[in-house]
Image (cartoon, rainbow, N blue to C red):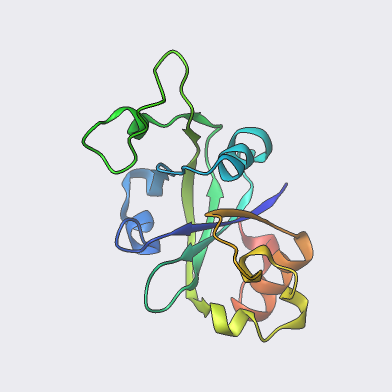
Length: 160
């Protein structure tokens, strides 16, 4: 099992939106960065843990927990010329973008970016690196366990 931090703008999809979605599952569409796409297509597996992170908002931070719920498959938003994620260089024969589905596990208190920075145990998290703009980053097992136990009041063994 691996662990991931996945950023979403809460005005597009918040942890509450995920909890209210059919089957509490949403497609993680709109990723237009090759490294983040490759994490989904090459590294993510069904059941991997996800820190659901609210970004580009007044209070960015971890807002809940989720799981990867599907293997990667074609992101249809790349083909919609009227949509914000359209990619004119992509074709149905050779799609450039894929995504996974994410399933709700638990809403947590917001663990804000400034709070995350105060813990030495999290000093190497990619989300805290200067200039990091990736929407998906791997999380080390030690970081995952620390976050769940110490900041999110959750037993990592209880997250299914």
